[in-house]
Image 1 (spheres, rainbow, N blue to C red):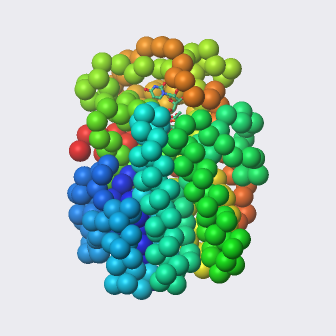
Image 2: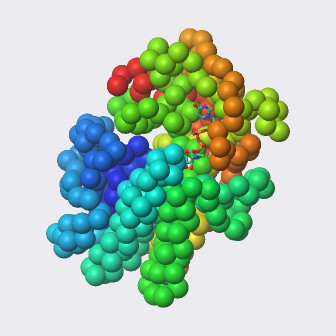
Length: 331
Ligand code: UD1
């Protein structure tokens, strides 16, 4: 079965490609390489020993997208492509809305045109906005605090409406919590361009001596140690979740939103400690003021993923940090 992976050269996309290929799917990757180096495609081939069909195509280019469907019989799409930096989205809202939303509409139009109506969409726990009610359950209302988050909220809405209008569509909206870690081979992992914003890429840079310390945003949250609590999930677990979602869509129509998290919260200081254990070095840190838009605590209710997909995360934060460190040293 041919599956098109948009954004397949990126962090979560590349891990999902590996899992799909190992599960026997034929994978076609479409990526414009805007936020990743093209090398992940080669690395996926190295890990799996299989040649990949790769298109360097921008999703804003409708005819380019349509051509991929015309040249291949595609049974399902896993849609990762999109801009994803929160701060940048505040500075460049038009770019974010145009790229993420128009791009997704182009993909859906090309799918419809070519008779493919099955999509797994890469959404985010960011759609819970500042709800504050934990664990976060799929039935909560959605909202956002920045343009990046609103693109996820809007795309979820567009895809739901598509399923309402045409009962032939099947869509899974996967709401990821905080994906970290790397493939156990150390060959693929997270490699953000420019200065990192997310916690693990920052800790990795400090561990490598490329940054002096971690700035811990806030130590007076209402949490056990005062620092922010998140639901970190191993990217390899997340990748398996996509396969389960695609399998589910093979026999179900309509749309569903499902959380992919571990259901367990970990503080910034606990993550720093786990990373110190993984790399055998001290990770210096300093408390600084809170980052605007951050919530105190965010973790998933994982019941629906278990019940609907039969999926559950396997790895804990120790393993996530060990795999992340292995990749960081190799890159
Ligand atoms: C962020 C995005 C979210 C996106 C997710 C993707 C924001 C507000 N949210 O989630 O929309 O889906 O990344 O992975 O940016 N921290 C520090 N120091 C740092 C970096 C982070 O203390 O240098 C803290 C944060 O305050 C937070 C935790 O570490 O408590 C995790 O932060 P981060 O990795 O940026 O993820 P989120 O903010 O949860």
